[in-house]
Image (cartoon, rainbow, N blue to C red; front, side, top):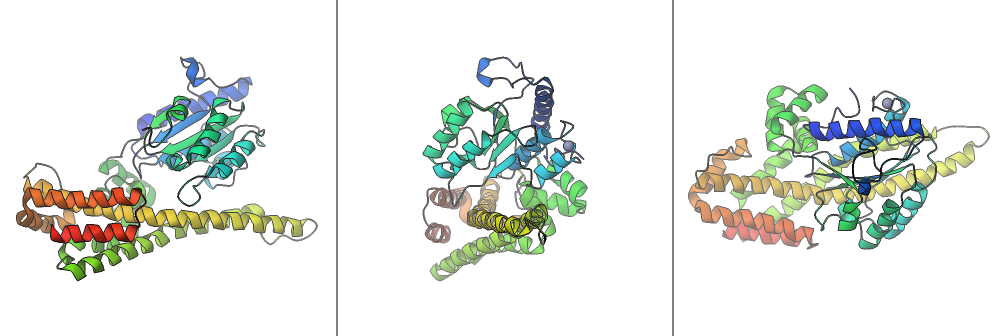
Length: 404
Ligand SMILES: [Zn+2]
């Protein structure tokens, strides 16, 4: 199992990245420089200084970026998954791989300048300095400009890996886009997701197939649904919302319940990762050391742990927002099912387990009413994206769903 094994249903992207990793290894052997992507042609075998991974949430943008980073640091140049270069990159402890997780809801210019500066240094492992920017669409404009400068005149051994939903100018500036090679990831098919749940996570195939369909192509979500009974309960609570909207009071209650469920899901989703990162860092720092230099090392360690906790806190905030968005996607799936049934469209329902309820809704609301409700959910998502307070947006949506 190499570092690309977890990139589900992304054969094309994986082939591109394997070629680039091989080219990068050849560059190191030859002591040459990677190709300039604006120069035309493909003289470097596809290796270049700046990459953008795009795709819908859950398609594996950051998984792809990390896997590629590991392949670049792999002592065999392939991403074998076994060597120290691969291993430390995947566990987040490689000295020449930096991961940027947006602070709060956007990546600020200060953080970006510091990062660009450090990325310009010579790689301590003798291979590449890799900077992974998750959610590059959340860069502030000033931070984007700082990054652009670095991408326009990249230090010879520095590679930037950006992740964004798309290369639409709303997500990534045209100038940054023009300096990067794009690796588009697709929404993996339910079959591909189910297959990886069975193979990698040892999940029974019936459960894996159900979870893959219910998660609508989101690999991490499918895994959580398959493994975590509480995640299944939270999803059921979301899908019970349409039945519970019997009056104004019930609509407000449903709004509170949805917000609280999102908070609970966020806590659950980051807990495992937080703990793994913390213990990896503690291992790397050699916690509990004694003797000469240990006191100084411990002081440095305390600072690094504090940094990690800060990053984890900002990730928790983001996770809450993302969890609410997933709940809204589930809910949109329900009204989409009602709409397709009202239209008698020949498509499979998103939620097989609530198909009967959606069918009853389709009878009652007809196509018009189903469409209005679907639009109410989508408007709520857009409002939250535009920074309307989530509770207000969700309350407005619940009232609209009740009124019809
Ligand atoms: Zn390796």
